Amino acid sequence: MKIYTKTGDKGSTSLVGGKIVQKHHPLVEAYGTVDELNTYIGLLRDNVEDTDTKANLISIQNVLFEIGAHLASDLENDMKNQSKIPELKQNSIEFLEHKIDLMNNTLAPMTHFILPGGHTLVSFCHIARTVCRRAERRVCQVYENQNINSKIIIYLNRLSDFLFVLARKLSNDLKIEEIKWIPSKNT
Image 1 (cartoon, rainbow, N blue to C red):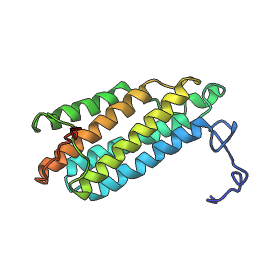
Image 2: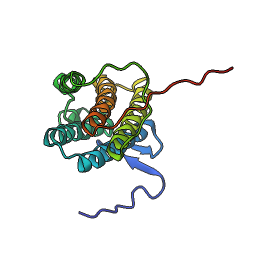
Image 3: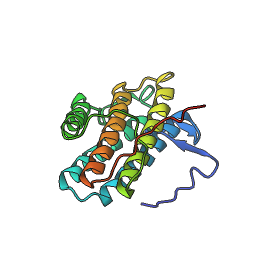
Image 4: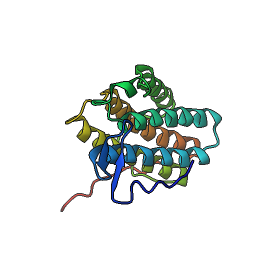
């Protein structure tokens, strides 16, 4: 299989099902941002030593591929390909919620907003979290005009929460002090 097809050389691409769209189409923006998120999750996974966290991140990456496949498809107009696209399941959302609860149970309660950073691994987590929020915004934009699975928005919302709590857990595990955001007082 050739990697380069030259079909996108004039700024367009095709969705699963054959519909041609511009590369700046909201669907392409959405699945492209999900792909970007997946690469940051991979970077995070490459740097985490805990095998359970690695396994959780691999599970998340697989779900992100499912989401990307859904977003890269013209499902509204292509009934024959609908059955080929994996459907995002409720248990994927519940998986994240369960992992968030487990991590949160080991952490001190939050009393302030926390400045991102403190360790490279924690920063990777926060970068992934912010890309996740951008992916969520792109998907919400598509959702306004197209029939896509609403669980995708819920999943991305939970995933950003998961990444925030994971950053806190990593800070705790690495014994990195969380720096609280203290608003400056105008005098």
